[in-house]
Image 1 (cartoon, rainbow, N blue to C red):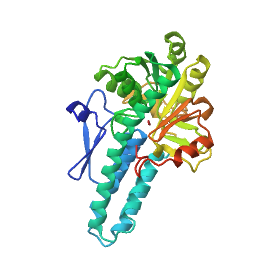
Image 2: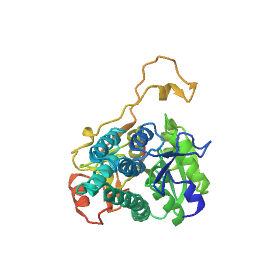
Image 3: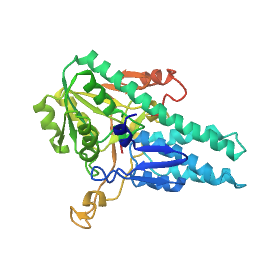
Image 4: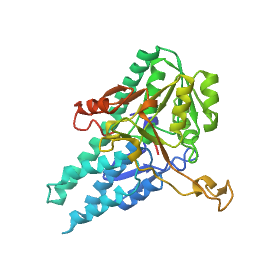
Length: 364
């Protein structure tokens, strides 16, 4: 990994210490915060120090390691660890990668009575989740490019993305931005338009920061300009991540994605959702069952200490929306690509075997 790539890591584990890039401060400051216990990691997830479904799952896995390290010398260490795991589970409700990672970590140490042995297994498991996520992202990038070429040729294509599903939201390289990075390397990308993504401005603060530092041609736009730009600029692909995908292919992603998919369908652009299989929740038959996180109205009324709206105004602030499967042309996972996903195709996808951590690998 180059020094530049290292600086883009959202999650760093070194010598038993967890460091998280504080994404609330980007792009003005690149500041890493250190964490020594699971409740602090849970607070970092809730407060959006770390965000993006895969990165949240990775951070939570390391949170389990920190919990075992903190409690393994005490007689009731397992009960204390279970309480910390529950704290991590409650940190954000929509991203299923969080639950997947915690379930996996618990299964690794379920039979261990010796704390030191459990700690060694947990650390090895969390590192494996982290490393597999980057590998999976690179594979999804390649599969996405192949699918674009198959359906619409070499372009070069004009694309649009929403929120940030890049290296900052994952273990590295990115899901949606992984496809965009791979398309640029393959010479089939003309430019990408980036929705600013209110209210946290992940597009203007994070996606622009990632793409411009790699000299990928990227243009920022207000969310409300998307329809005009799709029509006027000839956008052929809308490429986004996901925080949870239901068994029928419905996909929850950052608020505004549903509207963007409707705009794409009206104008003849294709919609690609890029997400690892850890994001797929086969226990939910449709997106109607996906819990949608609601956050404080201050996120719309204020930016930092600056008041943007009218104090006391009622606010609706859903963080995610659900794009119906019928509006999704391609679902790209590390296990393969699903065209026009539905329940049967999703079952077939999940039945494929691509390794024990194939689902370890976007937005929030």
